[in-house]
Length: 392
Image (cartoon, rainbow, N blue to C red):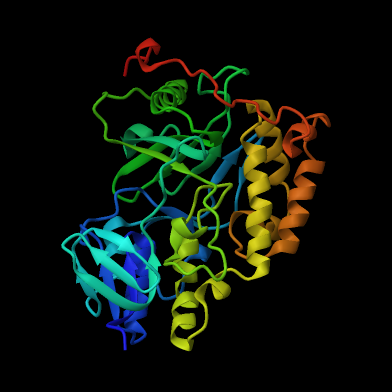
């Protein structure tokens, strides 16, 4: 008999949640991370209905009843959205019933994990939840977020409000520059994060460019900053594929295992929602990869990847037109693209309809890759030293 039923390597939200639920189900769990008690550094958000029922309310820091999207027009999305609490989520995923190894993992195999001090952990199933590999020139999500006092942020984002995608032409980018949009939500701690975001560019968009665009948007609404506000950066690949069936290796899970949404960059809620599927498969002695990734889910991933490729070659005007078309689609269609793990029929329909309703007609060729397939590849962004950051 092996020492543990499950060994989880990496204790971000996906790994910590997997270890927590597996231990709660009576499995013998080993959890490996060099800093297991560190709070999760990034800000995580999701749609409220994506969260599993077992997650307590204390994991949510802020609710937004109907967030806003700006394309050609303003759209209020009648679907509750939330920002997760770093401390609340961490505490909700307690590891009291797991054996925690506060070390870095070296060798990670199908049934064994070797730690930095030479200790070897033996487990029936090893899950690799260490996050994403190096970006390189892969298609990326890039964002620069600035944390602003709620009173200062009020002209743009009031209490209980949120901007999921703000495509208004206020970031200072010209028509011949790669597009980006603003994401801005209150965090439940008296601050609002303003985060200029780029999706789909190979290699991503530099932080200094995103920061300048964020400042430009704030200035357009009369918001001036002190200059010493905290900030955070995001820069990671969007095209991490699901694991292959039958591979004699540790099972990648979370963003490392294909649960990073290729079109949005979200992964935490989907990972948490799929944890019990993985735990049940281990308890029943079946393959977790088969349970997590039936053909319907793989079809959804394949279609979303086509959406990612389309996003990465659009201009700002084309992006606005495409999102305008998407946010006039049905609730099920929007849910299929944004959230559903395996609703392949609705996803296929909404992708087709979004392309069909994007105007002018010729822009549809860019969306599907018949023209301008390599637009923005190796785009020469202005170096940091040559930027003229506005006074704050």
